[in-house]
Amino acid sequence: MAAEDPNIRPGPPPASAPTSRELPPVRPPSGRFIAQLFLVPGLIVFFVVLLVVAINSMFVGGQTADQFLVRLDSDNTDIRWRGANDLAQVLKRKESVHLRTDVGFALDLCERLDKAVKTLDADEAAIADSVKKSGASPNENTYRKLEPQRNLVNFLTASLGDFTFPVGVPLLCEMIAKEPGADTANGTLRRRTAVWSLANLGASIKEFRSLKPDQQALILAKLHNEEKSESLVRRQAAKNALKYLGEPVDVKDPELIAVDESLDYASKSQDQYLRELVGYTFNFWDGPRAPEVLRRLSRDTGFGTALETAPPQSP
Amino acid sequence: MPQPDENGFVKRGFILLAGMSLLAATVLTIVFYRPEQQRPTVEIEDLPAKASEPGWKIRYNAAAALLRRGSDDAPWGVVAEMLDEKQQLKNCEVARSDGSVIPDQAMARNFVLAGLKALKEWPKKAAEAGRNDAAVPPDVVAKVDSLLDNPDRELAAFAKKTKQAIEK
Image (cartoon, rainbow over all chains, first blue to last red; front, side, top):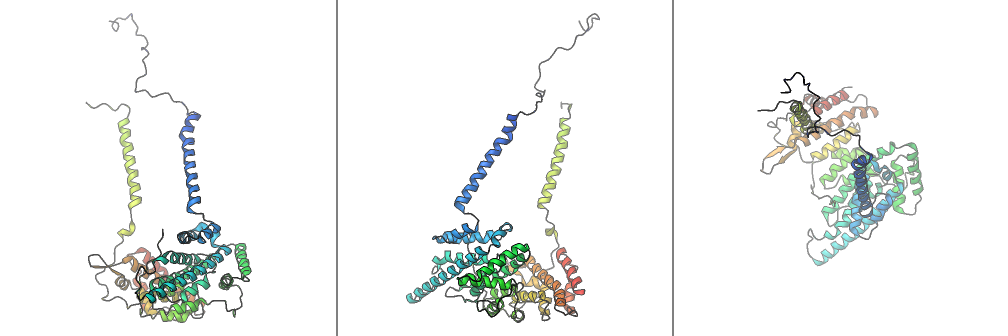
């Protein structure tokens, strides 16, 4: 045997074929390999995102002031109130500071809210008259067709509370002073929304003080320009905004509104929740009547009603 | 007969499994651990017999607004009631579907916190109005003291800050 024969030296071990247990040779990845792994998926994701953004801007609606106004001026009531709903949500976002400081946009919204409230009041009065003439008693379906217009009013009212300057004061105070009409539930909800928006507005004014001086100066300059506007709504809104931002105003001007007087009126309402909101709102507003109103509310006996109202439905 | 672990694959596999388990346990703990849930709840057996008189929310909002103005007409009785945790638990009782009644502890806590926050501002606002000798009545101070050892840490911490503010 070869292993025992001292004259036969064992040679080198025979070369063996690679077995399945051996790893493939290591090579650096080629450019094509890298492109397959990263570039192609990256391009796919990019085009998908582009498609989503395009669909969003074409069909869902944009978020500039002009785009919101186009939706609010639509002939379709559903587009109007959905636009107002989107606006109410967008204004609250931190990145929407350019909208919250846009004087022209705020005043445009005031005009639209004023028009929407007048239209709604007229429609409600017309329905109440026809119900009265027919002798039937109103039920939950009586005012159902006014739902989109009511939503528009409620969302626009809420939006005014998010601006950094109080242009909404005259309209909000007017809504607070208006007693609920034939439809008590919705009239009550509108008043509550107005008071709540006024409270938010009081808190939002602090944001004005944190703006840069040149931004503040620009806003004040635009408001001063609007003081001479021919539109009563814009003129009144601008004057009251300047008053509550601490600018010198003519105190005898009949177009100036006293917030504390409106809240005083609301504090005597039969609606318990409205009185509760008034007390809260006085954390942000002041006036000669504030201490007396708060003292009275601190002795409140819970008289009146605690009406349950459903908030406006978001889409 | 088990194969010998010549290349250490099995051993490395177990080490990896142990590492992954530890990682998963850490992540799950971070996700699900809720220290608030372990907060001891307030004793609800000895609540007052009756809730506050109707209109209490209206009175509380007005009292808080008066405190934030540093008013010398602050309704101290209402403030003391706001800081009474058991009274707030009674006020915030809700009915369950089976008809039994339990207090909404989170809502009750919010009312007490609101009272503490408003009271904390009162001395500073009163001083700004020129009333440096204005003092919080002893019964209200006693209510604040009773909250210093509250099992709710946030409530106790705020009670401490309020106590420091009203003692200055």
